[in-house]
Image 1 (tube, rainbow over the protein chains, first blue to last red):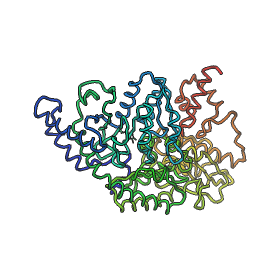
Image 2: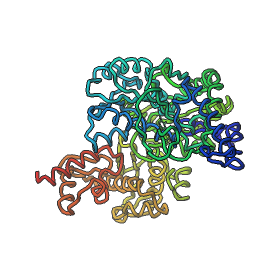
Image 3: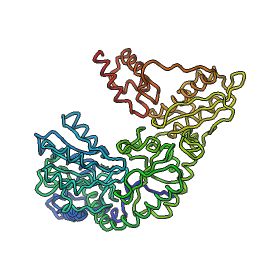
Length: 390
Length: 187
Ligand SMILES: Cc1ncc(COP(=O)(O)O)c(C=O)c1O
């Protein structure tokens, strides 16, 4: 069966060009980039090239790029470094729709280390309450950490504006741009963030490679203390193969950015509008405009997400319910709950996240499959009668 | 992904006895939209109290659908007395087992069946004393307090193991923790 992959916010296909770039360094060129011999140094040169390509994607300087093991490590490193930089400040701010990589660390810091945590709410479209945010920023605030784009709904936060406010108040600002990269323009010269996280496997590089951008001049305390790698900001011999893959992936992401914002957006909009038109009682979660071009979170009343996914699986369709992390639990996702999405559609929410590898034919396949899946499940549902929710 | 047996998958993809049952004289409902699963069970019982037909409507995950489908197959041909003895393990065993996290789906089947039987016999299921804490499994604060005291329970996980409370949607876990705290504090 042909696989229709529309779960790109969970992870992406490693691009062929990326694999091609990596392969020699998995085999032939296995040297240590720090070694004092040409054999190792040729790997070192390749890493330098990769660092430049990553920097180019977000308009940073190459010295501002630190490679990590994943998006989660980048988030954790940034947050720990910020609180170390201001040991006297005991207040940190985030939103209530963050990825667990930020949310759970904040809860941990609140519970175990006595930090006062502010979770800034969002409205029913997933838009951040920036008035609340600015009101809560005080002398005691060490850090504001907010995601650029939400992994479940695709909703975007006004990072540029927030960066200005935090700068005025002298508060450190970290943004998790894991879902934004390759989908919206990121320019750290214009958007004045202190730290920014990226993850390879969301932009067609392999899993297990992350990036932390650290603004020049910012005091940084490393999370992994060890060798001199990454200028002492992240110990451990470099994951050379993945770093080289990440460089190529960033180069491609920059090139494909216009495609994602035209062709991919068009596919997403087509899928969205067809589903809204052809399936009764369904609704899109998240603001329709302030949203990633590839993401569609859509809730179907009176049916349950896991059932939908398993039936879609029979059609070879890969999507997710809420986020990949919550698909193993029975709660509706914390993001949808924070937005106040009603239970009737929250439990039946499916996220489709596209990439430039998707085609119009695939969208038609999804539309036809979903029409029949939802019909079948609603015929079974005690909350559905005569074409309506009861 | 959940580890489902072939039998669960088969019952999910081809559920038996779906829909309202015309002429049903025993109906039992359990669960809610907010919990994430709900089951409405229909039975047709003859004059000898034998279940001659059964059907269901379910909102929920694959194992909820499969458990409901299995339930209707199991009870067909049983007398009400026999059906009253059916446990959630019987439903789970019929399906070759359910993942631990999904056991509540079989509990839901058992509970709907009890309610349907009570409905047939015209018995009002008495409201349990206390306030419902866990909506998924219908567990009250008094039951939790009793269990915590009797078994010296210290964590919400253990409350779930004893009473299933908190094992469904998980919304009440904080509430359960508060109850444990208050029992410990001797209040
Ligand atoms: C917004 C966001 N932040 C962080 C992560 C974590 O990235 P990684 O899987 O590389 O640790 C993810 C991916 O799951 C994400 O979507």
